[in-house]
Length: 260
Image (tube, rainbow, N blue to C red):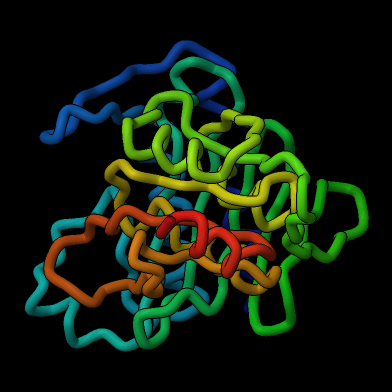
């Protein structure tokens, strides 16, 4: 199934790039977040692909999110999709946007594919592990990085959402170097060991993180709330995530510092 989902993500990426390479229309959704032709084109590709692949498994996509909680709470297995994560980055044309597709079972992401169309890179994971693959090259297994005593902390943070809570968290770590990145690629940096931690003390939605959370966890990391509880999916009526911390191989050390 994973190979099929990778192919669906690739086709969605092609649809996005066909828009990216020309002038495109931008709209505003009810929550004032931007929406482009590319979001809708990718959504259509993914919905068609998943409905063919698993016709009996429901799909929750950012672009078709008006499914009631009364219906959603009955789901124990479903697809959770962000057809274009990082629409603001897409509009800026900086390449830091992704296609996110996750399979959720019993509130946890058990399969995840994150595809960045500009770089033609896939991050993907299931029970067999987490991997990164650049188109045309062999896949590389991912493993989170541990943190050695005295080593500078590599902290990934959002360019657009550097909150006071994030600044306070980073100060507790001590010596730290910040890396900025858009979309779910921030979680993927932790999964591939390029960052030790990603604190997110700003709002996100469940489709923003599910696929990349699977990659992080299968690479040996953790995605937890500020109270260091697991981040779960479809466990409540609203689809907003709690604030969270993405930890590499030093989760215990991060927890100790965060609570100091």
